[in-house]
Image (cartoon, rainbow, N blue to C red; front, side, top):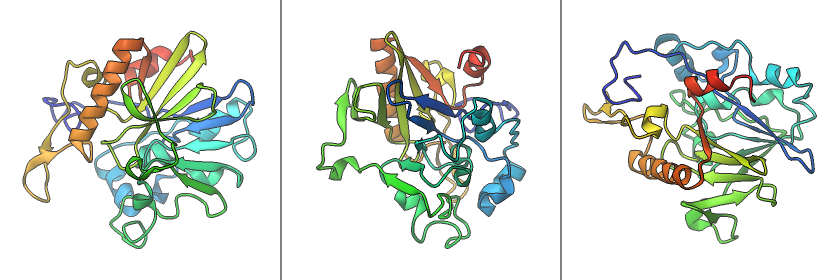
Length: 272
């Protein structure tokens, strides 16, 4: 936890989930999957990611997203409409090749920088991001960068300056969530008329930080020797977004779910 929570001991090691979500629109029955977790065949990640999974992080995949869908009698080849990937880190992208050719993959603003072009694997063998991640036959959509959006795609909602009403009936909002990684997205989902869930992805990696009782870890960047590195690519933007999420929770009472919150997962395993 010392890479995530300030003051944690180096030997404070936790087993945490990497959650995926199935969202079904009540009227149209369109099915959306938010995040894909970790793929079972980790040797098929780019080499730098695979090396990390051999030396830094231990992964266990007792049930991947496709097995979860199959248990619900949902065929990922034919029954899923859209996959929203909150961001392109290995523990959220899973294995998109197992979806059918009619599935649309949706990525956040600027994510094309990480998945297309010279900075991606295999063109750059040291890259963590695979240019072959999304199968060529599938539609890949990137949400517009807010500063260049002239279409009115993004609209404010509460403290969030950029949100998008995905189904057009205010049942699922995609929320631009800058800071953690280029293209980082959250989702606000209406479960019923009285209950909403806020899927916060990697807005923070620990509930103590979400609740304000701990701080994001800052540690030494081995490349520069400076104590300036964190789990977020832009810590200032990430902290500003976290404050918006905290404000939204205070104002609405909405349940905030972090992608790697082990306590929430254990307490709610039978509820969702």
